[in-house]
Every structure is written in C-alpha cells, then in structure tokens.
Length: 138
Image (cartoon, rainbow, N blue to C red; front, top):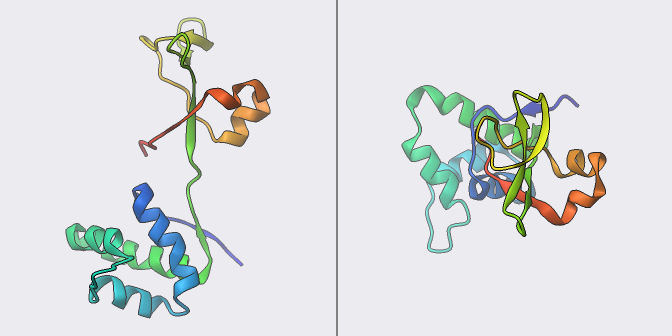
C-alpha cells in the first residue's frame, strides 16, 4: 500500500485528531462531513474544524486528501523533533558553521540541531535525558 506525506502543516492537537480519524471513521467522506458540518458540545474534532474554517480555498483539496489518507491508513505522519539541551548549563547542541560540526553552547552563529528521538539515540544514548521536544518549523 502506497503511503503519502501530509500536504498541510498541522499543530500537535490537529495531528492528534487526524490520527484518531482512522479508528472513528470507515469512510473519508463521513469524516469530512463531520469536520465541516457537525458541531457538538463534546467536539472531538474542534481543532480540525477550526483549521478548515480558516483554510485558504486553494488548500481545501490538500486538506481533503490528508483526511482521506488519515482515514484510509495511507498517511505518513511527521515524527516529533528534539533538540539536545543540557539544562544544568543551559547549553544546546548546535551546528557551528566556522568549525563545521556540533558544539555545545548558545547557538549564536549556528542553528540548534533537531532530529528525531531515534536519530539522537543512535548518535549517543547519553542524550536521552537531555532531549527536549521542539516545534517543527517546516
């Protein structure tokens, strides 16, 4: 079965709702209908509904494709990204452009490096207690 990356960017709350669609719906059309039409007091799709309501009309097809892929089990969800942060010294691992490598410190001339949890642990299991989840900028 072919898998598809999500076409739109979603917040953590929107992703949680999107992932839940597969267990709650058998039909993508029913899910889309409930997102755009139905509203209840215990609204479990409020974040997706809010996203739909402020969505640019040119992005509606991408939104529907993401809903379809979530319900059908063909969506590839983004993995959480982490930075390595030593809270004792308040330093991060960042990429130093001049030295062309990872360094500890405050990233003045470089950017904090973000990777998935598995990628960091493959480099060094000692990083695990220092992993700090970051919002994805993509």
